[in-house]
Length: 376
Image (cartoon, rainbow, N blue to C red):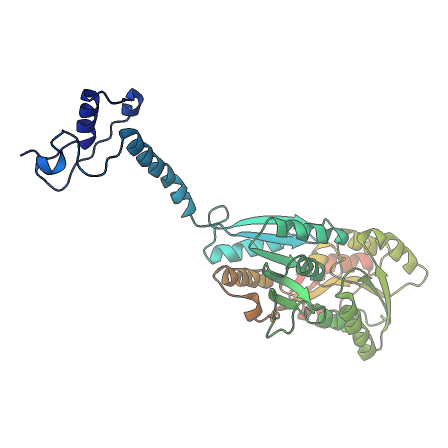
């Protein structure tokens, strides 16, 4: 009784003996089928010497095995986990260095490593707000998994570009008033994240100006005409003016290119100080304020670091870390509609004493004592 029969080799031998067609090329890869169950030879090969049961030509068998093997790499590839892509959209009038640094660090703390289990698509309008819609649409076409925005115009542009891709606001002013979310507790759509209280802080800046410059009575506000946040921003400053007995003169401009004309106009009706809306702020605003010797204040520590007299805002590093936590929750299956919008709880007052000396302003000791940071 024979066992461990090589069916294919035995079939070939009998085909050659019977004069059947034989393809030598088909033997370039030896295929062996060894039985794991020992059967009598008579049960395997018939009286005519050919294998029993349904016959399969050797060429057909090799084709079947080769075709199956060819699918293995594809199946393995399909099983690799998808690396999520995060789109980041900024205006670009302010350096996004802090945002990117703190946001990436926040994700790293949660176990994400760029290039391994997360990747980024960064888009900046380079200070031109009218470019935001096309950049937001580009991120949508790339099918990013989440879009992170900084400042209200970017969030509005992203929301208009998609109602499906989750949007995380790293910092946005009045998302309820601008229609980005239904409410802070129940956003109700594809947008969630951090809502700043920049309008309220800007209103308090009026009193801070009065505390720092007791003789100040007239404040000009440079507001961004293209930013939906301008309305609540100006409303809170007007309220701060009424509370402190300060005259507020709002001036709306469409871009940083109009700073020159705006500051030149101040020479005719000189204010005691100027407040600059954060979606406009940039190094150019600080340079012009110093040239015209006008004390300038804004939201965001970067304004004071660039040479502005003072900034009063939420601590943005904490907001950017929190934005990373929102992204993590969404990537793990949470819906933006179910994630309440949070507001900042940590604030910082930064005073630039170098600028105060250039302007000839004496900062009262009680104001200095309230500062979280003094730039000497």
